[in-house]
Image (cartoon, rainbow, N blue to C red):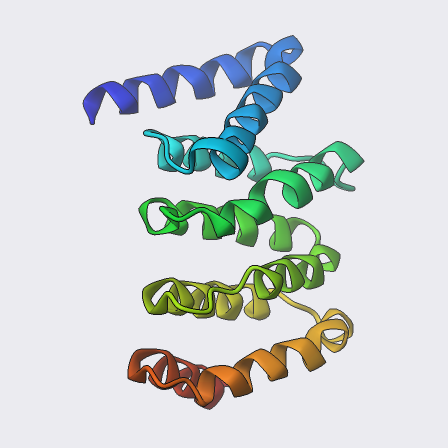
Length: 178
């Protein structure tokens, strides 16, 4: 773990110090994510890369460049379908929240992407998705919420009727909070 922390610190410092390498570093991270999504399904160090990415996203200038929005659409949202999501979900959810905080207009896209990749037979993963959707909803403005309300409430109703008590209990808690 210490070695990963050192590598994480070094990569973050290189990213911060050498502006010319920033796009290269983001592309390398994106290629690794593509490999995980479409080829091998697991890789060590994804959580650490997502931690670095969270601070990188936090430093993005507004308005977000199209390149950054594409990264969200093509790399981060599809990471939700990886079988080993529970190993790095907390860091991925943080990245999603950073995007929604930076540009609230991206919240519907994040929520729709999450709903599109919703797990059907994996209860722990379903609970993770519910937690993430709740976090993104807190950052969502009313006009953006209107764009996802139908599909969101359809999913919530399915979760309420879930045969697994953890999913039903979590979604009921979720609805009570609103």
